[in-house]
Amino acid sequence: MGQLVNEHTLRAAAQSALRDGKDNLRGGEKPKELKNEWKDCLDDVIKISDTLSTSLGPLGAEKILTDGKHVAVSNFAATILRKVRVTHPVAQLLIEMCESIDKELGEGSKTMVVLTGELVKGAKELLDQGFHPLTIAHSYIEASRKAVEFLDSIAVNEDPLDRGTLLRVIKTAMSQRLDDEDGDYFADIIAESLLGVVDQASAKYDVDLSNIKVLCLEGGAARDTQLVHGVVVEQPVVNGFMPKRIENARILLLSAKAPPEPEKFPNDDFINRIEIDDPKKMEEFRKEYDALLWRMVNKIESIGCNVLFHEMLGTHSIHERVQAYLGKRGILAARFVDEEDMKRLGRATGAKRVTAFWHMSEEDLGYAKIVEEREVFKPELTDPRIRWIFVDGCRDPRAMTLVVKGLKTSAANTKRTVEHALRSGSAFLRDPRIVYGGGAVEAVLSFRLKEWARGMEDRRQMAVMKFAEALLAIPLLLAKNCGMNSLDTMIALNNRYASGENWYGIDCLRRGLRNMEASSVREPLIIKRRVYESAPAAAMVMLRIDRMLKRKESRDREIPESVTKTEGYKQTVGKK
Image (cartoon, rainbow, N blue to C red; front, side, top):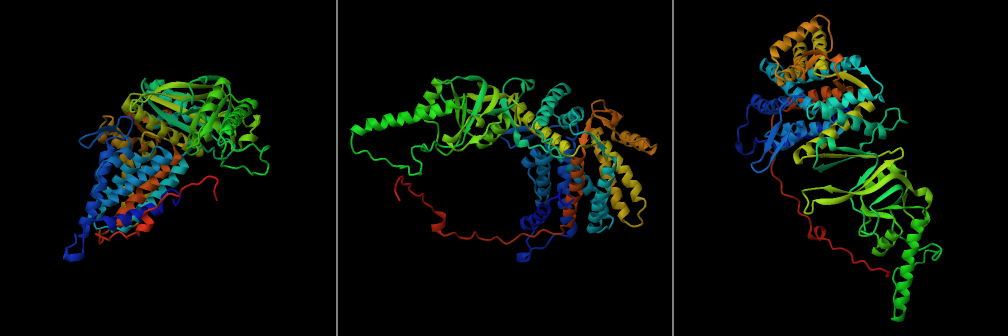
């Protein structure tokens, strides 16, 4: 659990509660009773959990987020928690853990928050019965470890490169935000992008998601989203005289300024500053400079390059005359290319980034079937019609681009959905063990934990039972959110598992109980492990806070003016 739950985050949350709390013991103020301190903390967590619980599952509700001026609609847990007003400092822990799960695994954050809330509800009941908070906290951690042990024993091993299983995992991750038809379309292109960039040489099939670029464009329908087997560079062709489309592109990635020619200055004794004291020499200098620019263009053309990408290197760019000369030779060029895009271009096309201009060779070139400038629509800009360069049809591309389209609100949500699905699919490739969704895995673990708890002979048994009840709340909430009766569902689940039938959960789309092994709902084991370890860890921190103190305000340390004010150095070229 040490790897999955950030101890520093937990400790920081506890310190934040003490630092930012409301009670001030200085000045004779009377502190609140300890039970009220706990109640305030736990009540805030329960409110957050109850808010998100109605959004659980594919038929969960959306939330409207507004500040009186702006309105947003979302069902993403991290987005909702980031925008709501949280009164208790310890509740910030949920937000931090939620964002951590979202960034790494894509899914599971909402379930983690809801499970934490259910654990806190159970803890409140036990506190009212006289239980010590540490007894509850330690019992929750013990139950969490046992649940993970059971989870590992029931997980199903799959082939990480099995496209069918990967498609089911991705569709499950997108089930709340996309319908079946759109879900099939997006799952197919997301699976293709993941399998295209996965490192099959490693034992864990790692996926570097920085190799998959996701762009959002307004306009069209969601089904107009396309997968580019290469890179989309958010820059136009640098000069209007250059071609806008190149087939069978031979691509040069230039990450260097043009230094002096080595054959003319073998000892690096190039003089950066030239003084001309005779007006007649000005024309001679101009001709030599123009000849140098032609030699640069000839060097680029001599290695067979017909597409040039120049990296953003401060203020340095492609000289205007060089742009014109490249256009005459039929070479397409772009400047100010981002460093990350240069890396993706290298992985996609096989090109090597050139840092020594005069030493470039044909071996440094990459290949793409088509490099084309296309018009795209960005309505938030002053001039909404801009042009990007699409590098497509690369041989064995190690980098790809997903261009998501749709209306203004839907396109942004679809982009976020795609990013979550990419992380979820990547998690499955790293650890290709799955469990069946629809609350089935929570139901299985709940009934197994209850059987295990019956063997305990002390009050820990009641805390473990509360943990099991919290797990069972997940399928019951799924049933409630899709219009089923929670009480009837609980009775039906009890009957199924009492008769020895496993993997029964909630089929939300059919609104009924179903053996989820026969469904297409699949969830990566690694996500469930994180949820079952993070939720009790968060509950434990909240149970261990017994009082909040307001810290004395401290003045900011004064910084000398000489340190805060800096002046730029004047650059003198050619002088020592």
